[in-house]
Image (cartoon, rainbow, N blue to C red; front, side, top):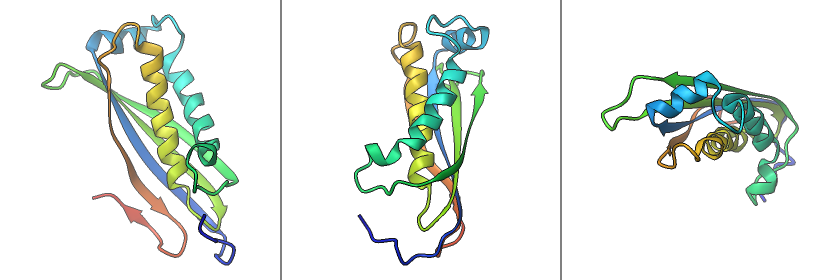
Length: 149
């Protein structure tokens, strides 16, 4: 691990996203609460928060952080793309005050939420695809703010 002991503690935040592409029928079942495993987006939201909190257990060189907040939200696109798939985009924002950033926590939260959507819906749509897990922006620390183009 990198020694961050001499770094100043600053307010830090990061937002990441992941998108799940799924059949229109699957999205409709999610919206209508007809997925057998339960309320997909509520469970995915909790899973994303739990994933952020467990990031250092999953990523070997990631520092354990005192995360001050994790916010998970969803944007549904019910209009099918040219491949006939609708989408759910997960936005995950993690915050802390400390000597190192929360980019990995935000990306883990988005990814775990996407995996949870897949797990809960795989019985009706095994062809779901997780796409574009990426950092959208981060703030704080010596390097300051960064935003994806």
